[in-house]
Length: 249
Ligand code: SF4
Image (tube, rainbow, N blue to C red; front, top):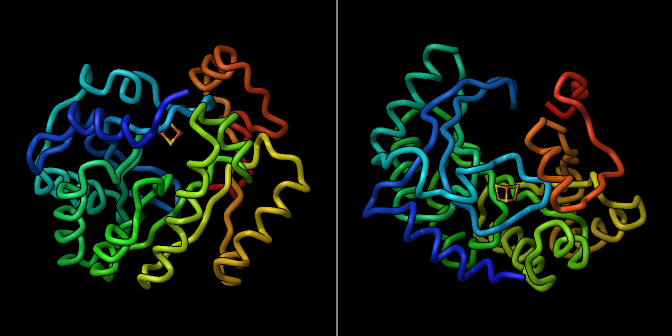
């Protein structure tokens, strides 16, 4: 078992240099959210057993290059312009590592007419981080819960079960700070009853979270299958790359 907070610090030392962050792809188009420009960053403080990110997660200092926020925004906006998108995001790993880089990028997005979707596990979003995110009008945060309870979280991520409370805490902090946000839940490994118990927990934070909850299921890309074999995780529900239901895109 590892300490995700310590791993976050160690990973930041590898992927953050001043205001610059390391990325392995800059930038690509994608069909998610109805079309979105995406830049893929390196480094994550979690080790999910179903993760689709390979070397950029496990050896983040061995791939890609450092980019300033201005360079990332330029690449994202040119990709968005080319494809007629109104939205942009960071993906591939954990975008909330390197707060100064992210906040600088969000400042640039806020000066534009683009909308930014911040996809995160939320484990680094404390009250202060949430208040800083509240300053951006073009931002929506999607907190991706790894399972429905502490035990599932630990099984899926290999991290201590108590870290799950940081995921729920992020949703609470974001709501209290007035940041537009919603929960997504990886449900591929969860019995139905556990999902209902999670809904009860989310309702205690805010009844609105139940209306906006997004179900997330595993897509079995070949490298994801390889990771599942290594970690021994067996999904109850998963979809092949060519069979993703329309409502999940
Ligand atoms: S949080 Fe995302 S990027 Fe990080 S290990 Fe989990 S699935 Fe991979």
